Length: 586
Ligand code: ATP
Ligand code: MG
Image (tube, rainbow, N blue to C red; front, top):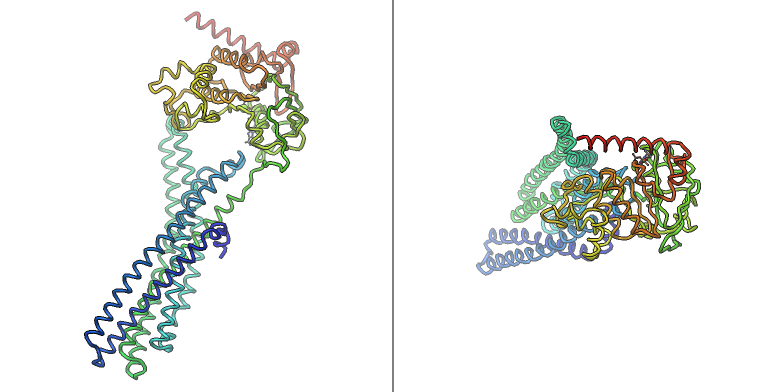
């Protein structure tokens, strides 16, 4: 029942199809129960010497007609039922995927990729199986059993029916016991399958690291343990599954023994005819499938239930950031103000930003520096609205960011994250991700800006080169520059470069930044970096230390201050000079 409730949205749309399916299935079962009666009648007539050739032909003709009709019905309901199941499969998958695309980073921190894959494959399959095969077995059980029972009473004998079906309650008991244990084991097996998926994903994406540390054997061993675990848990499922069939066979066998034994006794005392006994035994035979179907139904329903619960739990997880109803629309953002912003990651144990106050005017370039882990990326991510923050601590043109819709915020921003995010498509598609309609001219322009032209020319297929998953076909610096080209293509109001040129040599970095500065006249640029020369030109530079601003000002002011910035700047300059000397000596 809860299964149907949880899929209410689907059954409400398709109920007519299901009603039609059930009607056709019932008609098939009904036709199926007419045949034994015809056979029994013919036998009785034969025994009484009343069977004429015409009568026999009539019976055979009727049987033939019934068979054809059943075939037609079967064809139609099968298509209807499994069509619905396939539709449910598709719609559930679309729902899940749509849900995931709206989720923020902490969702993916909580739900690992392998588990999500298991949901989208095994669990959805279990659910659609319930909506297809599950409905089939349920309707078959209910309809065939009742039609056959009524036929037994009407055409044969009530007493005989009761006696023969006496063992059936035992069957229900056995099945409900086994079903419970099956469901529990199935949930455990699905979880283990998710863990296996995770392992595969991590190993494949990290294959280069695994190889370079010669960890293949170890990883294989670990994987064998995981697959072993999946196997063990599935064997446990299969073990309970296997108990269903024997339980059914034994009980059906007892039924037959009673049917034939007690039936013969009744024939002996002339309470029923021989034809009726034959009819009855054919009926009993017809009951075997519904009994098996019932066992299957319980089994399928338990799995479907376990899976729909897992899917539902996932769908009910909300993203932490949501749009307000009366969102303010800002087309071109100007002033960005942080007002005493303190921020902690939902999973974090300490504040990553502490009491941060900062004003960035339109058209300014802000440099963010500080040692690793000081909060640079965290500060930049606040502008993407990925995490909830305390009210009125970040304002855009005086409007709290929580009052602006997420889509609006993201429409201003070109973000080059610290870890490159390339998809296994062509370079062209990767660059044009935010603006698929970009012209060739616009593309050439950003290739120029990101200093990618030469790199692309050297590739056989140029812009159509497929970069592979995670950009395996590109160098680190090339990946970073593809990311930059992508962000520049949309000509965003706010450009965020998070350590975006760390893998590019200092001279190229300088040249790229110089170009960017020229084209971004009047637009805001935020740059986090470890190479201080990259932000020396910025109107404002802040130095972060464990989430706090410890120094701020222009390059000149910070040099005069003689703090962390000055020390670091001189050190990097010295290193650079030594490096150049070495090169000259070579
Ligand atoms: P780097 O120069 O290495 O890029 P960063 O200055 O960008 O460092 P952040 O990534 O902002 O540093 O991290 C700041 C702090 O927040 C770190 O202590 C880090 O451990 C923590 N942190 C970062 N991401 C998360 C997360 N998703 N969940 C919990 N804590 C996080
Ligand atoms: Mg960072």
